[in-house]
Image (cartoon, rainbow, N blue to C red):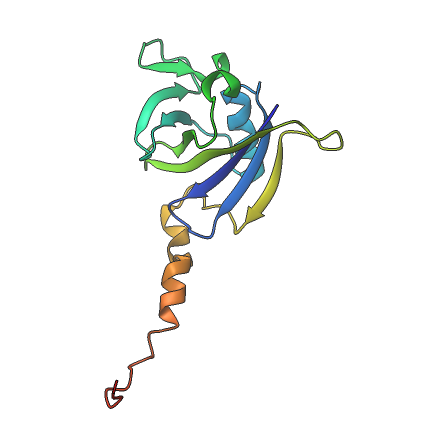
Length: 162
């Protein structure tokens, strides 16, 4: 099976990635694929399972922290963790600034014979800067851009509804 994830960022509403990965990929391998696909440098990171409101649940760390609160990424596969569409993961890539990507499982499907996995199936807009959280501030959201188009409309108060 291949899992398809939609990856979003709260820093740039234009950023979208659809990732297709084998269901038996470890979280560590998934982390390394994400880092490569975004062009990021190697970094400390964590995955969290998340509920429907994106609240963090169980943590999966890059290094074994030796406690019961976190689980090493290399010991868990995606297939062990996720069982239904719409299940969610949070990928914390900047722990100092609490910056993350949000991943939602959108599909589980049979692999296509001509495709190599893992792969980026769709991408839109550049990834947020790995080190500078303010670098994407000018990007804004698509909603704000659309609403700016209406900023010059003052209306006509002389219009009579009757």
